[in-house]
Amino acid sequence: MSEKRKILICMGTSGIAAGATGVARLFEQELGKRNLADGFQIIRTGDRGLFRDVLVDVIEPDGQRTTYEYVKAEDVVPIVEEHLIEGNPYAKRLAGKSYHDFFKSQMRIVLKNCGEIDPEDIEAYVMHDGYSALRKAVQDDSAQIVKTVTDSGLRGRGGAGFLTGMKWKFCREAAGDQKYIVCNADEGDPGAFMDRSVLEGDPHAVIEGMAIAGFAVGASRGVVYCRAEYPLAVKRLQKAIDQSREKGFLGKSVCGSPFEFDISIMQGAGAFVCGEETALLASIEGKRGTPRIKPPFPAQQGLWGKPTVINNVETFANVPHIINHGAEWFASIGTEKSKGTKVFALAGKVKNTGLVEVPMGTTIRELVFGPGGGMLHKKLGLKGVQLGGPSGGCIPAAMADTPIDYESLQSTGAIMGSGGVIIMDEKTCMVDVARYFTGFTVSESCGQCTPCRVGLKRMHEVLTRVVEGEGVPADLEFLGNMGNTICSTSLCGLGQTAPNPVLTTLRYFRDEFDAHVHRRECPAHVCTTLMHYEVIEDMCIKCGACAKVCPAGAVTWERGKTARIDPAKCTRCNACNTACKYMAIR
Image (cartoon, rainbow, N blue to C red; front, side):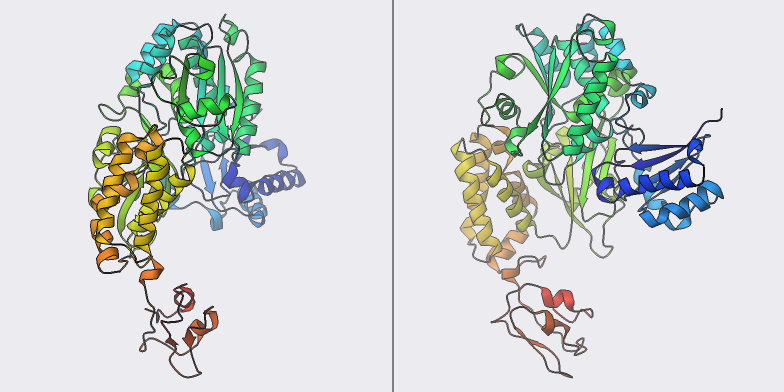
């Protein structure tokens, strides 16, 4: 019997939102109508990382692959008729050079199966070496597993970058009749979607990594703390857990060994602070999600007071690969102190937005102009990059050759964080960026300690005054002093890093702060209260489009005459500038 041809359809959250469910159904119907269903296998995968949905791949038995992007329902019949029957690829939706360039420089370890296998089919995972690492681990010495992970140099991918093997060692050596493994899937950074995509596209990898960790430290219970805003991830993860129990990869006798381990899911209620490990544990226990003082660290006294290992989704997903390929293999990737790869969520003013996995040590420039495809608008250059989410920092374009590793980023004032990367062009106001991220951390602060609760609020108030044109020179000194005070006196990691966006923008973009305060100008033309609008007479074609959209009646216009804008009435809503197709509004 000849091998079936495969049709892969990316059906993660973004794919489904773009209509992947209907596209898959239409493929089934069209193949059925033509009596071709027996010759094809339709595989519903997770998202691949580049969000050009709906993504559809046709794979021949010899491995030859044809990829289609932005597939709509009306494209299904042409693909079936022209490609599947006639053998001629449907040119209209063929993925182009930029699609292939996006993946060309990546090294996919964590994302290896995302967009390639059916995440709801455990057999598909097993066929791709799934659970082979767990089988190998339970036949080994648990101390050796800890040593292998330690020697690999794997560091926590959730933000702080603590050595994973060291954390496991502390928990293994801690006294306790019950120990826990907790997976932090509470992904709260704006623009971050790494955990969601892995849980939707390859949930068994996380389960396998957690089970190996459980064996290594002597834990019998695991909990995945996942945001409730990820319903598809929760659904697929639960199905994967159920399948793993049925196949003997979870339960009382894992892989036929004496080792017992099982996993449950806890859905979070959307609090950003619950990404902090002690706040997360409190939430699992049914308490308010607030951090506590450390020590004791969770490895000694964690969930329900018992020794607990907490790692994030990406960290656990790396573990099976380390066990299968060895510590030396993983340690050979990356830099001297930052081993392996890192998954980043590219967003902002860049051509290709999505998930990128590259070796540690890749520079910011290589990330933006490699997989990222360069700036979204050719005439607007790279101004800066926000790395590490609300707790990260803004790095200027002049430092684009900085390697992305823990130590190099820390020296700039930024952090790795969980991997959110926001690209900003010359039309981005860095003062407004600092205000935005500070506003986010103000609303997400648990309010437990004074520096974070009060200090961040005062910083946000000052930044708001600055962007509204009411700042004074003393405000800039206040922002620096208050930011440093909050960093050194806050209780948890959220407060200790929350001022980073302000401190780094003050450090690298001081001229923009000075322009706002001393000249009452916004160089990026973003802060509307610092702008005024006028019509360029030589460029105005006297069409009146600006007057028709002005909500404040600030634009006066008569047929055949140049429009005029009354600054006293203008609310700076920018509607006139948007409506003018001839760039006659300055």
